[in-house]
Amino acid sequence: MPDLDLATLIVVTLVVNLLVALYMALLARLQPQQSAFRHWAAACFIFVLASLLATGRVYQVPAVFSVLLAHALLALPPLLVATGLLRFIEGPLAKLPWPPITGWMLVYLLALGSSYSYHYSAAVLNAAVIVTSCVWGVKLLQQIEPPRFINRLLQTVLALHALTMLMEIYLYLRYWNTALPVAVADILQWILSSHLLLTTVAAVLLPLIFFITREQTLLRQANQDELTQLPNRRYFLQESIAYLTRKGDNTAATVMMLDLDHFKAINDNYGHNTGDVALRQVAQILTQELRKTDFIGRLGGEEFAIVLPDTTETEARNISQRLRLQVEQQARVVDGKALGLTISIGAVYSSHFSAGQFERLLKQADDALYDAKRSGRNTVTFYCLG
Ligand SMILES: Nc1nc2c(ncn2[C@@H]2O[C@H](COP(=O)(O)OP(=O)(O)OP(=O)(O)O)[C@@H](O)[C@H]2O)c(=O)[nH]1
Image (cartoon, rainbow, N blue to C red):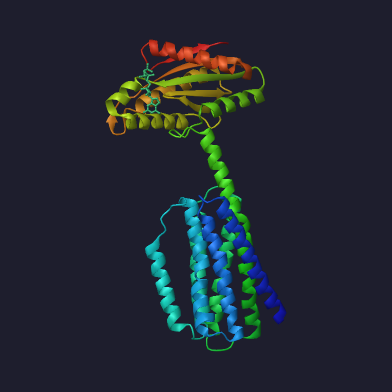
């Protein structure tokens, strides 16, 4: 490869890193609560600084700066990318695993300090640190669920970079005692492009992962009841009405209202925490007993609502009895205390369901629930509207 190509590649790499560093620094300013951006900005700035120091070799800068100091600094960027990911996943104040990081850095600096003037030692050690950080990065990214495709892409680029670095280690070890053949030197030069690819892809994908994840979290918080993780009242009503509107008139469906029995006494006798565990346990039983296509919501307090789409009257009667029975059996013991928790259910079935009637049917289900409570609790009152 002609020299110009290498020089151009180095300049492009440095410029891209500088631009990414400025971009990350801007994001860090705009999102001060997300410290990951500060880690990633620092990673790019340090990479540029260390690379400039390393190019000092060409200008006869003493090896203590152009090799030792440059390679000491070059270990930081991959580490900062990983610590940024950790902060991103576990929160901006997450504790970093300082003992292993400091231990590894000390081992690295000692090995580097004692061997940097010896053959390709500095480059091999640095590549080993990059491989370790890339593997750590891939493992950390596994903890971020959505957005899956973008995540996989970043993991793939990190893994490819680790493989490139392993190849670099192999080549240096293979020609340890000799000057590198021209072809091998060319390959090593192109390893810079792998770094360039990694930086560019990471610069685009990391903020994208951050913004998509945050958007999903905000959406979940807006739609979900924090205690039970079920849809909250607003979202339950919105989704049920949207479904019924899509289905049109004359849909067979059942609306249920469900309430924990003597819940005030449970709170009073066992404490609010046990009350909360009871609510979560009931939510879990409902989720596990119903189909994915049924709608469940926590309307507030100890009151839940359910819509069973595409369900016959007989099926709905059986389901409501099954829910009541499952709570009676599975929630005998809550939070290690024998509460004997039960629920009452009011249900309304209609074969001509329509979105416009939904609020009225919910009210009728509430009336049915009132009847269930009056008739002794731990029972189902079922109205069939035909
Ligand atoms: N632990 C806990 N309690 C709650 C929550 N929301 C509402 N409550 C309590 O739920 C209780 C509801 O009591 P009531 O409406 O009198 O109903 P009840 O005691 O279950 O009586 P019946 O419904 O007639 O069987 C109140 O004590 C509320 O404080 C919550 O999120 N957590």
